Amino acid sequence: MTEIALRQIRAIIAVCEEGSFTRAAAREHATQSGISQHVAAAERTLGIKLFERSVTGVKPTPAGQRYYKSCIEAVGRIEKANEEARGFAARISGDLRIGLIPTLTRAALAPALEQFVRLYPDVRVHIVEGYSGWLTDMVLNGDLDFAVVPASEGRVGLTSRLIVRDREMLVSNPSLGFKPLQPVRLRDCGPLKIVVPSRTNVRRRNMEVYFQTHGVEIADMIEMDAMISTLQFVLRSDWVAILSGLICIADVERPQRVISPIYDPAMTAEFVVISPARRTLSTQARRFLEHFEAEIARIQGIWAQTIPTERPARKRPSRAR
Image (cartoon, rainbow, N blue to C red; front, side):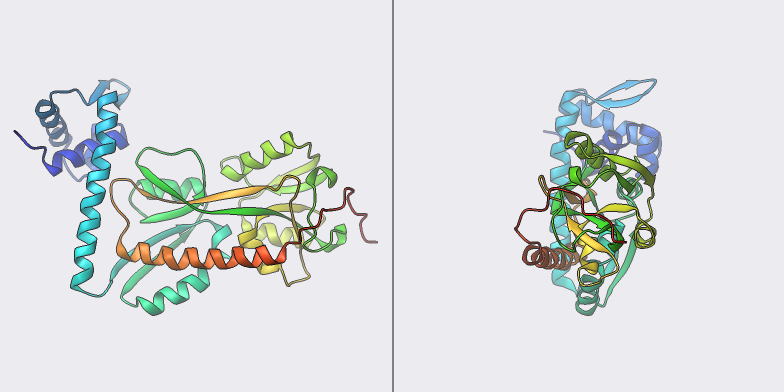
């Protein structure tokens, strides 16, 4: 029985993820005719049609989609075996390319990175901070080993794993009268002048659904995809923001900004680690994630001990004069 060659499997994966023989060829550093020949040879061997070709592009058939998923799993196992074998040969080394959203760089990154570089000095670390859409594209293009982004609908060519489910906080200037760490009902706090992410950010859509579902009154809104500037603007004005507890942990013991856990119901955000489906995470990537997730768990433990369990007041506090 004729076997399917690994280069044919990689061609099938590339065409399925790129939706084009031309883009698949560019990704695999091959010619378009070469990719077409690999796919055609696999189709002949299997006796099935893997792709539907049209003027608008290439789409996998139901059989092709199922075969693609099996190929992804097989290639991942091969990559993992290669990484494990290399681990026996030498100390962990090589490049590590990471993408993180600003929510995760303010507090969680530095402690995890300090431990990692001390334990693995031969790894060359490259870290990019950005927002989810851009980081997702970089992972798909192979420019990053992985990225941590807000959870969203899956994309072809990516695998994802939940890394944390975090509680959202209302961040305000002390002049608005909120009590530090006292839970608040957003529907009792309006009308709010609020800074929100742009519509391309997954968290923006989640916020709008929450506002509409739970009767939160919004007086005015500013879009800002700049985390540090958002924090500074809240500090200097009567505008508020909703931010993840992972970034707010740095303000728990600082009086400049008031952190108020959102309650009844709580608002949460899920963050996932995404990586290319066509390859497994490298040893250095897995080790970094171990340290990073441990630091996130430490922060979550602090919040669990810090947030009070009593119910919040029903009315918005009056502003300080």
